[in-house]
Image (cartoon, rainbow, N blue to C red; front, top):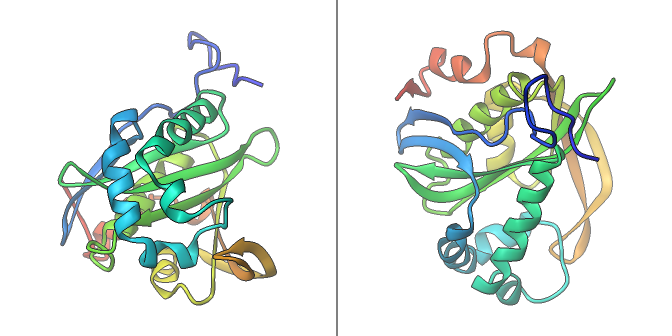
Length: 221
């Protein structure tokens, strides 16, 4: 069902969507979020095919071979599906950019309204920018947006225990580790345990971007 919108907004418009977030300066450069778009396809395909060994161990299994699922012709369907979910208030799919160049994605999914007001967040960045503050800045921008214009109360992320880089991102931002889901998700061909991290808006009263700036990990761009 389409999100009804606030007074004066067109029916079906997602709160906080579309939006451009940032930029935020980290040691790698300027990080920003923007809506994914159809013309991202060639870059998306090239980076996903190049980084198969970097990405595949952490991503849900899907039918078909990696090369087929990440061919250029696969992008229009994926992009269109995600943007449709966004228009119906169920997701927010963002491209992560570094100095204006696409280098990953940040997605808010399974948006639930009413008494729960929650969603999950997921993210990936290319191998050449991992460990340089890009993912941390992107998540900070995205979660602040969730607790602001999007109107959510809680966000969560599930991460394989072996994914040390992703866990560091969440810990640096102040996410709580809530527990372990055993054999939670089919990832890379097997049922994998996942740690659950979460945060509510009360735990970030000044915002995660402000938290990064105060810690000396980022500066306004």
